[in-house]
Length: 130
Ligand code: TYC
Image (cartoon, rainbow, N blue to C red):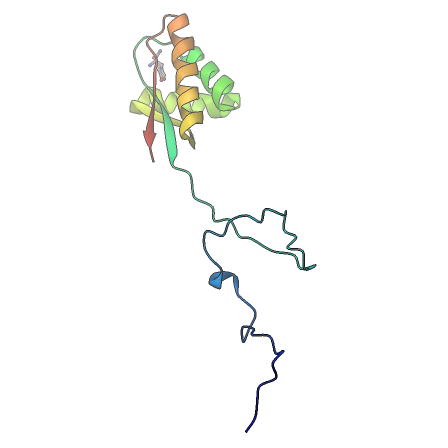
């Protein structure tokens, strides 16, 4: 009768694949050194952030040049792109300035609305979830 050697380590039949690892493994508290001379790789799962469109609405009074300025200043558009978006809003009633995470979109809406109010233009800027 064969007797298993006492000292044989119990090991997995194959190396652990990433898919086998615990999905919420705690990050190694020792910076990836487990004291055995073996590097410990931890996979942290990422989540796609919710995204929001920032939109400009048309009105009859805000000067076109002001809208172009807003698009250049807060949405990093060059003059040609800014003019194209402004004209799209002018002709269609609404247009997209950009897509951002919640806090960035909210900040841009606030900055645009504050500048419009300061200049007494009725320009409306809103955000909507994608
Ligand atoms: N319709 C405005 C005008 O004729 C221009 C305008 C464009 C206003 C875009 C707002 O979001 C806007 N002066």
